[in-house]
Length: 457
Ligand code: ATP
Ligand code: MG
Image (cartoon, rainbow, N blue to C red; front, top):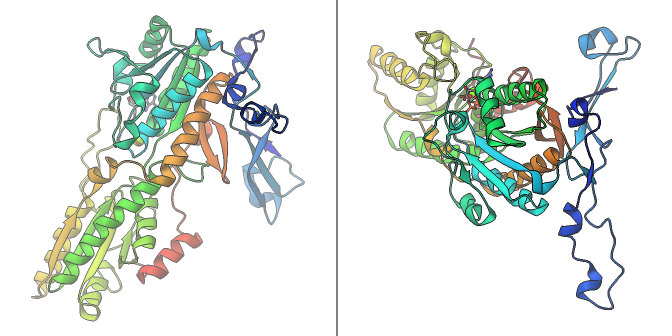
């Protein structure tokens, strides 16, 4: 049995003071108060999560210990089990609410649900009794740029922010060095930091956590994974993904209508997914209008028999039109490498949609046939949407659990959903590599069955 250990305040401060949590009791309205003759109230009505509660991350029965490789800790056993900490309110907390100054920061790109998470972090902090809550504007940059003032946050400020997309606090890429961020945290007297962002942001959050430990600062750093691409390891899904898939279908449907209404019409829709094709795969599965789905994990060729262009020709001959869905990271080998990097150091990708459009037009023109190719890139329209109902619920629980985790004394952790249970992960485990679509998985095969596309290699 393997267990993830998550960093706790007592690792640095063995004598850290424990306070009783009033969180659940405050939430509880004893039945007897409302109905004089009511049932006796149950002290544990809302209940606390025990620090030793674990959620089963996975169980694999390998055919032999050797096929389990490094994952198998016991050489005589081919079973691997992994357990993670269950998230939620604890009976004992490690911060006195009146001594807490909490800060929230959102980094990277936009994602539906950011405001929902901010809102629930603020609301839950207030329920604990925290008075000092601030937002750091425009990502990590807000820690260093002098003209960017902290934004005071309260239930009143955040009450309706989930009704629109984007981030109340603003986002950015790049920014100050980790040591400068920690200097700023120290100066401002922040002792709880909630960081909403993707892989890059979490690498930053973990470095901030390490630096705080090095300086023996009693600070809890808790992440909430924000990745519309759903490319974070170990989690069932991340917030914003569901909304993205739903919105992507509008673009796909428009592309379908355009293609269907034109003579030899071909629609191309580019969806998010730099290294992982989850949005493209799920949107293709959901819409039922995609004939070709291209993702970064599965290489393809354009030219040759049974390749993409020949298949498009076949589709025009048999169906009259076709729709292609490509993840932004698909087919990057065909595009010129620029070595350009964004402010956070991520490689700037070439536009696969433009390339496909040009190549398809050229192919049909060279054969003396007509084609009407339309390209839709709905990226910024999708990212700016407000969260749908299922993401709204996910954001609510993640926001609440981030606050419970910080009060419980955990730091360098991130919240997530795992096998339908809410859990805390150590940050390094979830950012060790991006989660990708397994080309041998049943889900990808189901996608291929639904599009009817052949193997393009
Ligand atoms: P998205 O999914 O939108 O790309 P992201 O969190 O990966 O989100 P990035 O722009 O890569 O977005 O990074 C966000 C912030 O994290 C930036 O301010 C960047 O400077 C910082 N950051 C990225 N990588 C690291 C790292 N390895 N160490 C410290 N900070 C980092
Ligand atoms: Mg990133």
